[in-house]
Image (cartoon, rainbow, N blue to C red; front, top):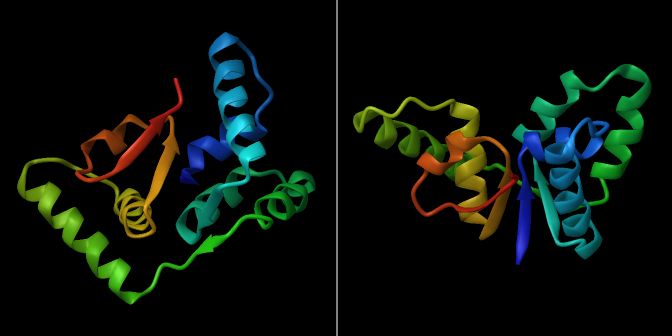
Length: 131
């Protein structure tokens, strides 16, 4: 099983744990990283970079670069747009970036690792919530 880490998963991984919840989340992420069956996609990378301080950015990016990169091509963007429209017609507000991440996870048959509860709104998305 391949795991796609959402931005929140990477943030929890690199953040210093401050309580039992953050320690538990970080340990879950560490265990998945040890399995080395994780991937990254462009939108997650783009969301992650602004939150990294300049001294740490290169170290973080070199670690993340070890993992397969899932391409976000034209067809996947169309699927993400359709997913966004489908959810909006049901009255569910979503971020377009979340639609792209969800569409990528479904397309590449990945389980999305996240602490963002908004992803529970997406049909056909396999989730591993960080609790």
